[in-house]
Length: 288
Image 1 (cartoon, rainbow, N blue to C red):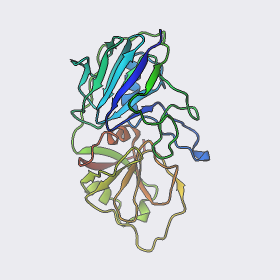
Image 2: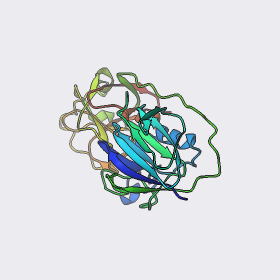
Image 3: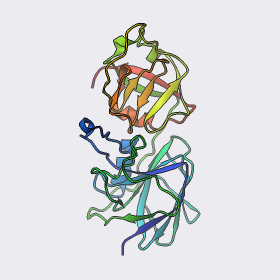
Image 4: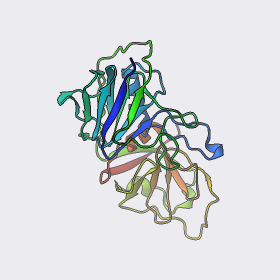
């Protein structure tokens, strides 16, 4: 008997995410995929899913599901959040059996922004351009979850879970992001303003990018506009107002503002967990 998950509540935002759509930027399609790739991959590993199966990305919790058909094995990773089965608290970052007929609820995370709920077998919805990820910029992929949705769970893989528990992440504040200088650092007066300032994440941040306030990286006067060029996850772009934007998973494939640095991939995962109002700092490093 196949398992189904009925969506009772979604919280602020609940999306299906996987590894995304790599390799299609030349035709204008961004990769998208999980905002915190490390947390997403860990959730799948803990329920013994092969890499790439779709999981649920929740923003600030509030997700509630009812299990129908057969029971399921689930695991919640990323931002540590209270997890309850039929009102009973269970642990995050550990595989949990949820019987048929039970309700699973994800509360607001105690730290961080995005949590990942993986189900053994993955969420089985039709892929769009090879991925089950929702891209908030283009609208590609399965739509955001809505109350009343029925999600099919895929067949269980042959491999069995072998880890009982993984350590939850620690999110120190301010978040310190390692960044490689360039390629357009010469288009601003002083690129070191990026690392000399303590920034604040704006409430206008989303999966496209983390917008920062609290300082200014001044553009070079009279430098003119750049021709639009390719941009990528982790690029730190500086618009004319001088307030940096760190591109996250749903970034555009091209941009015309100078990119003064690129955040290391592992630290983009950390950026994806920064809440609006929290502080962020940067630290120059050499290219890996």
